[in-house]
Image (cartoon, rainbow, N blue to C red):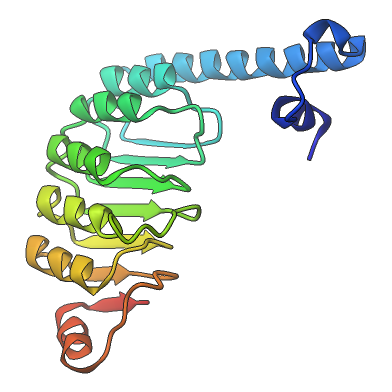
Length: 213
């Protein structure tokens, strides 16, 4: 853990005035770098003249930047967001409303609720590929299939689905089988709640061109 991380995540409340001068300067340099990077990306988006079709980001994407992309790039077809901890659920939903042509969506290292996923799916009706990586997903027996049900109810055009470390069970998988009739590729790596055997296993093997679990 870096010095900056120790400051931000320390349980002890620190007064900024107590910080060493060199540490304070370093923090503001980091913040300024993030702002400059975002401004540079906005300029690139402006120069695309609405023709941007792919957007991938890891880390410090904000609601402001994603909405900037969505409102100026309505032809976007591929969106990948990885570990963007500053992006809010509301920001993602509002952006989805402006991306009706989106065909591929990857949300990596997120724990969005099923409700958020369902709203995104309903706004992006052309989705053919969806990836949700929940490395930090908590296995709650009361809502373990929320993601799967949301996908089944709002993404009927899916051809490919990747759920990494998701808590869905066989019931959730059955919902996906019923709600996504065009699905050909299914990746369920590290989904420990799935138990494929007997007739259910045969059903899945016969159904998908590619099945990983």
